[in-house]
Length: 435
Image (cartoon, rainbow, N blue to C red; front, top):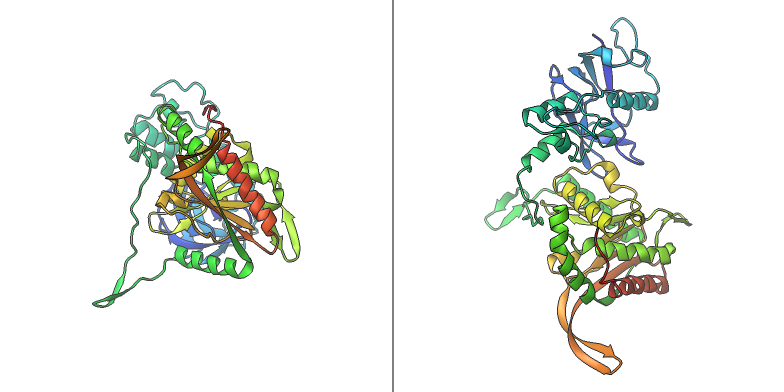
């Protein structure tokens, strides 16, 4: 039996530290690989940290509300089966002498490799063909056997662990919705607890996320010279196309095709035409981003807002964008976003039309320089230009708002970019297929 130190793993790009919110296990508790043992918060997202070992927690080296650097030790664990872990990197604890710990980055890399090397057979309730290269922890396999989840069904579960491995929380979440039919989410806002001041006034303490949002919004208004332009877009072709494909798409994929991926696709195309929108500012330098990473604002059940990111959005076709939008929205509402899911955005969009809002003046997500808001699509009488003359017809119209940082985006660029998004939507190919 050996005692090893569990280190705080990497939590995403540019994240150097985190705050411990809750210790989910006590000293003396037995733990398995992938068991969530503590919950932490970064400046971007809350997440649970899985244990990389099978064993027993001997001692916590951190407590709730501690700020912990990435790579530092958080707990001492007595390993239940040290034969599965190479002895050349185990930081064994000895009371007789001081411990010399390897470079944290090297330990983290080895830590991850050990977990991935725990290759185990998939459940035998059905043929395991095609799953020979998938790794599952003993705990996940045990749950799968108890719940009679076949190897083929297990392979369909999306993993949120290291290298997309399926964790205990992933499989339990899957079980909770196994028999449910997926439908569009329309969650009621969960009001925070209030303290009564008198008969007519109550005090609500801001939660941590609301404080963070408040601080960022104020900072953004102070940093960027906000200007907002508007355009009214004819969405009739898009609306009719979506009506013809949505039933078949749901039947084939089990999910919905919303307007959001269509809007994001138009934004991505416009960014390729006007790459100086896809920038950030550092002092007096303009940083041009080659990757197009689109942040999409998602309202949470508690009323807060979070902006998960579709990285390299230009690499997806429309069906891929639809899958990614649904996946990130679901993870956001279930509080399953990882730090990487909300980092690295280069341009953001907000579909305020989902709340029946016609238009708005969105605030830029720093350090980006622009953000676009799409309003509700409404049927209105409109002038239709034809070769035979002008006609009055019923069209599906939508306002688009484009807020941009006037320090680096002039009105000409901000306006041309907005017009280009409008053009891509109005000239949408009504004959395209959604694979």
